[in-house]
Length: 100
Image 1 (tube, rainbow, N blue to C red):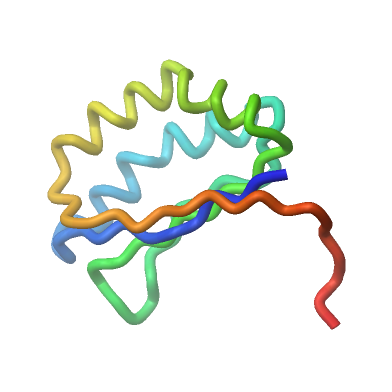
Image 2: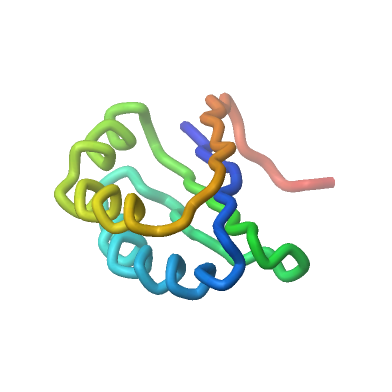
């Protein structure tokens, strides 16, 4: 199982525009085989920060996502947005359990 998580930094005046632009990709991605969670969330304290969190069953599922038409469309849309930074990492996990 994989977690992809991190932040995107955008000019604050364009944050809502970015969240609206990513909506079609989020809706479609959540229906993909192997996708357990996929979300972009505005930081409540930092107007220039959007958090990304993804949970995938496998690298194959993530690779298929990266090759999808909706990901290509998002890349085109995001290239037009004033995104000034990205800090996104992939984590491979071996088990999941409750927080105690």
